[in-house]
Structures are given as structure tokens and as C-alpha cells.
Amino acid sequence: MLKKIEHIGIAVKSLESSNELFKKLFGKDHYKIEKVESEGVSTSFFMLGETKIELVASTTPDSSIAKFIEKKGEGIHHIAYAVDDIVAEMDRLKKEGFELIHQQPKDGADNKIICFLHPKSTNGVLVELCQEKK
Ligand code: ZN
Picture 1: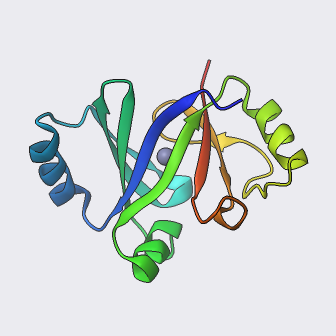
Picture 2: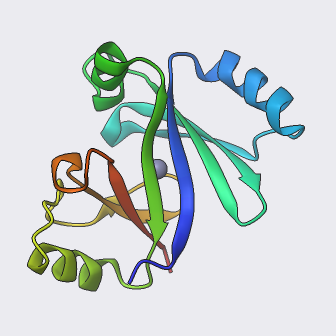
């Protein structure tokens, strides 16, 4: 079962200028900046009540974020849902016919292990599952 929206990921060209923009929008600053080397991205997180907003910028020209921005421009990139047991959820969703991008959970930003579902099996929305690291 997916428990709640953990965060919404927004693809941006420049983390620096978008941090300033979203700081003005939210009236509060981000609480962390984190590089995810394996994905070729740099991220920042804003806490809004129970939900977070993650800004994601590419650090290499061939990252999936760079390709996304090239194709679609900046904007909403993914919705991340919190799960208690990511391996069990990956199994369940695979059986339901969803296509997983990763067959094994991997390390994500913000102390999470994560997995993405392919948007072609979820009405065009890139879905991230995330489980808090214990
Ligand atoms: Zn995310």
C-alpha cells in the first residue's frame, strides 16, 4: 500500500536560482541540499507541512533530468509515495502489471531507499516509491 505523498519532484535548470524562487514562493528556505552521484543530480528539499518539495537539477549532461528538461522543459518530474516495505510493494506492483525502472531498490536522497515506476505504465506520471532508511 502507498501511504501518502512523501514529496513532489520538480525538475529545474539551476538549483541555485530555483532555491531562491521557491524560498520566495513558500516563505521559507530549503532544509537540505544533497547530491545523488548515481543519478547525476543535485537536489534540495523544502518541508511544507507533511509533504516535501524536492527540486532536482542535473549535474551531468546525460542524466535523466537533463534529458527530461531537454524534452519537456522545467516542471513537475515525479510524485513520490511513502511505503513501509519497498521490496514488498515492488513485488505487489509488478504483479499488478506495473513496469519498474529499477528491479532492485537503490539509495535516494534524504535518507531513503527508492524505486521508480515507468511512466508508460502509470498514465504518464513518473512514480517514485520511497522507504525511510532504518
Ligand atoms: Zn524524489
